[in-house]
Each structure stands twice: as C-alpha cells, then as structure tokens.
Image 1 (cartoon, one colour):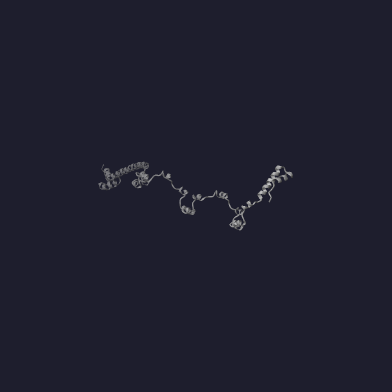
Image 2 (image 1 turned 30 degrees about the vertical axis):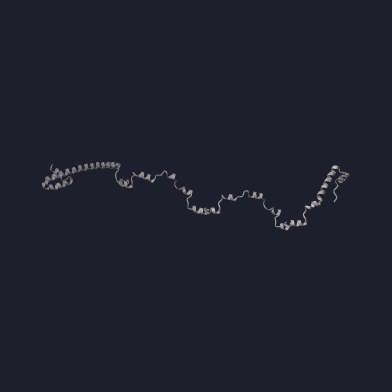
Length: 247
C-alpha cells in the first residue's frame, strides 16, 4: 500500500477552495485515520492466532453456561444493601431482645385466670371499709386500762347487800310518814274526842247505875253485893267498882 502524500493532498484541497489551515487540518485527520486503521506486520505480531484463540476460549463460558446465572433484570426484584439497611434500621436486633421476656421466662408467672381464682376470696379495699383502722381504735381502752378503771368499782355481787328501788317501795317516805302521822294525829284527836264523850257517857251511866245500885242495895241488903260488883266491873273494872261502891 503506497504511503499517503500529505503535501499533495494539501495542494489539492487548497485548489478546491480550502485555505491552508483548513487543508492542513483535514489532511492531518485523514493521515492519522489511515495510519491508525492500517495494520503493519509489526502491528499484527501482537495478535493471537486461531490456535491461540481456541486455547484462550477453551475455558471461557458460553451463553449456555450463562443461562444458570442471574441477569440484571433477574436481580431487579432484589433489595440492595442500602435498601436492606433502610428496611432494618428500625427493626430489633438480638441485643434489643435481651431486655424482653421469653416464653420460658414467663412460665413462672400467673395468668389472668389464675390471678382471678387466687383473689376470688380475698378482701378488696371496699370490703375493708367496714373494719376499724389502728387510728380508729386509738380512742378505745385496752384490757389493762379497763382492768385499772374497774378495779375499784362495785360488782353485782357487791350490790347484793344493798336495797333496790323495789325493795324500798314497801317503806314509807318522809312525806308519807308525815302525812300518816298527821292522819294519825287527826284520828287520835277524833278518837280522844270520842273516848272523852264515851267516857263521859259511861261515867254518867255508871253514876246512874251506882245510884240505882245503892238504892237497890239499900232495899235488898248486902247479900246482892257480888252481883252488883260483877255488873259494875263489866263497865269500869272490878277495882273501880269497889272504889265506887265503898267510897
């Protein structure tokens, strides 16, 4: 292949209307393209032969070999490391789980049902409202205080020696006594009056009887003296009869 004549090419381009700078630039581009695309023996010495090519591709993969491998299209549905990082950023790690209880950990704890059964018969705060607190009982006396307080007090046995209101109901009060005495005085006064009147009448009767007896004795004699004494004694007593008869 003849060498490319750059001088001749520049002249021909100038004759065609290019200026010198344009012509030289075009020729340089063409010369470079020719030199780069045309191989010399030196250039092909570095190229591989068919045998070398066969040896070189003997261990290379074919399209059939590649069928088992994933393509970019195949992996589009898979997450990248960045996407994986974003996805698990707020997820819990095993370290995070260490603070939480396992099923084994909770086996020793009571269920709601067990809790309900356990407290079914236990007292609630409402149940306790009817009972006294320690503060409530502070105002009450202890047995010791009670014992000290009643040590010198009277028992029912001690009271047995004393009269009850029922016992004294049969006795007269001072007022009743005064009233009874007043009534008695009145009765005595009336009785004295009656007695005085009775005695006066009796004295009159006796005097009359004595007079009649004296008259009778004078008439009948002393033999009837005993009869007279008996009759008179019935009224004023035997001694008074003798006093009356023998005065």
